Image (cartoon, rainbow over all chains, first blue to last red; front, side, top):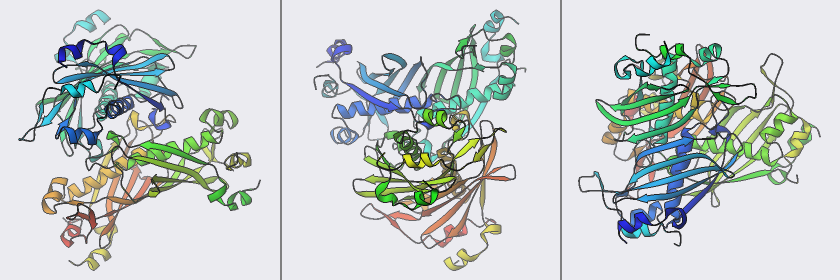
Length: 152
Length: 152
Length: 152
Length: 152
């Protein structure tokens, strides 16, 4: 599977999604009584890891299959649309919406019922530790991308 | 001072900046030994609060001068350029780079010596709690903007 | 029900317990790859809140039934017996093991399978905000204690 | 210096202390507007690390001098006496109050001006990774203990 086709298939219908339920805890909220926004990024990071798990690429599996691999985040942006507060039950849907040659974009949608409350996009790079112990961007293996199809 | 002139003066040379020294703690790092990225947002949020303090707008002063005011974050984006690790001493420069009518953009630059390691922009809205207890965007008072000139 | 009898019944068999499942996240771990210990206290605090929820005393219910009530923690102690790491699935059992007149002790047991990995005891006080806006310790209402019997 | 004399000298007057200034940040507080207690443990952990730094035992120095060493926490207990809130400036004094053969006790005192607001004791063990990659308690080297005398 080439990167062209992987980029062009409809990500809205065909890709693997991880749904994470979060119950807002007392300590997630700030003195205004709403979620302290850095917390969202913890849950989004958890979402990316959980999505890889679901694709059969747990940390242990990743390390076994691709020694020295890491997927550092290089950029993130988030829109905070609706606040959440202590005791709220929300869901976070995480999916990969773009595969580049060495990078990929992850989308996180935090939902309050049907409403989108926070939306986040992050770009990560597929890197492998080289002989000089530096992380080096490399082409994402086609079989990795394949694992994120929904029918896996 | 009207909002037009406040928007057009050169923010690069003339505006108030807060410099925050951060020594990376053991607990700021993840299992890869580098700063767990949600932590950056905690420091950036601290930077915005510290900048307002420096402008004479501590939380107490804000609440006294502008009852019911809040400056919620509506969007943020960050670029992670260089990682930092336990024991590193970094500096975070925070400044307001744009004043809109009801919103403003804050820039955070995390520096390792002379090098830019993380860059973040956030947009916040000047809101006041109305009689229905809802937060309502309002025009940023001109005297607030004036406080963020560097010669204050 | 008097406080004497409430103190003396066998807490091991008769009291309400909350079981919380926690999957250790990447960001829960420090640079040594094991859970950064302050995190445990977040989960234990969540456990206490969840136990009160389970007893029908959600934050909203508490505030409704006992205006101005709060249950601040006054002391905590924990023993870290076995470390946990990224991806581990653990369970935290939370129960109230002692009712005093104005205070009570909560026990948290973090289990890895059958093994006790972390044990924590916290003492909290039943306080009500008085007319001077200060928190004042008061006798725990008997009907509150009653709610934490297991057969509720 | 033998371990007997190191244990018996008066720790109250003679030992190295680290003072850490903390300004309570917005995100350190919970929905009740006071410090969310797990945060205290982050600062206390930072205090222990800073004390070792001050004794000339930074993480890098430790690892160089004592390959495979770690000082995991095995127990902690804290008393929360006075709350702190956003904007408060507090100080945390950290010192080692007991040296055992393989373990030692660290005391943290969080002060609001002259008043003790939070007090914490933690016990840590001097461990070295053995050939089976397990952490093994070992006698604390006498020259390590010596470094925590105040006249260093």
